[in-house]
Length: 303
Length: 272
Image (cartoon, rainbow over all chains, first blue to last red; front, top):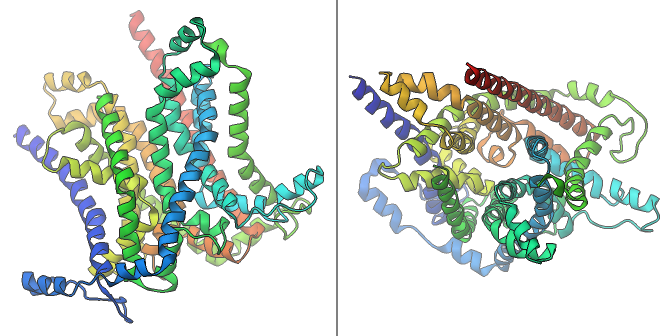
């Protein structure tokens, strides 16, 4: 009897989240793919054809025959989309690299802090992450505006005579991404640096290695797993970022998350928005697979 | 090893934290600004808090956000804990690779894709967009974060405790509630808090999944920010920050006390 109950519960523990994710994560993607192959129509919902499951297999086959690649052709014909993908990848790549540059010294300093301080320092890194993403991006508008706090400060110190134009430029987007995603970079870096055996560095230095060389030859290679995890955790969501380019980048910035949002909400062209999403997903599939493998490996090691 | 906390390390930690906290501190300071301009100090005032509480639209949105947050975080915690158990306890079942993929992928998935795909699902299911659809969307993307938090606790969990309970004749379900659940409870609580914060914070997915009548606070703040920056928004943000900071600090104090108590108990047990 107990064995039967435990068999049923173990089935349920797997089946309930599994079915939920199938229904609300996987199937929605299949719908996106399907609608990206539909024709745009001026109606509500603004696309044809819709699957009609009551028509059975034959009905679905009728739908499949009506699929068209027009939306994808449209994406290749208009240079706007190609430029948006390229500039998203470039902005996200640059910003992720800058996040690494800012995050590495912070993570390293935290990992070398006295052991009693580390939990507090760790909490201080996580705390801003708990405050709203939108609020943190919004806070930078007041700082970076031409009449904002940064320019007031620099002009009061007579470092500059004219306000710096940072708002609505790529620099503002970089600052926004570095700021918003910094904890995602610092946490994996910290956990790999903290586990490191520092006697290795002492050994390198005893053998006559200069501190900087010891860092490059010993510390950095040992922290590579953290670097990769941090890079993926920042790069993948940053590529499709909408809020930061929209609020800090102004109307001139081209990023694919913004393009998708506009296609959907402003142009109400759902099939084209779906095609944009499918291609974005294809671009990110390789980094996402890397991320999943890294997660699975970490899970195996922890076992 | 302790003597090597060099000046360079201290400087990078101090600068890093200054960068993380300065914008938030400035935002809070300027919510008490008398002047309508967000960046010019015109004296101390709490008038923006008063006008905030008289702003019916914002208050309604806050209420919607709170209800969606509590409901979705609670369901997501149950589903996420189950997913974490499935991933750590059952190493072999059909479709495990697909399952772990579906758990980890939403963590990094760009929000515009998740939002669009859920919206298209709701439309093809014929669901009216509103409170229910935002809640369903939030459960889906936050349960994966809960799963990761709980899973990391389960992985470091000493399974001999469970085995001992089962050897003594406790059935698996009872073992779970008597042994496993109390041990992973802190992770479940922080999973719930994470899910709740992600839910009340979310703009992009909510914009896709929500309909008229279920405007959430981030959606409201976003539409006001687009029109211009006002101290009233600073005040709203300050209140949100205060709520979250109080919650996180309280939780960490409770955790620390419990940890100290546990260490003391262990030492006492050893002495006997």
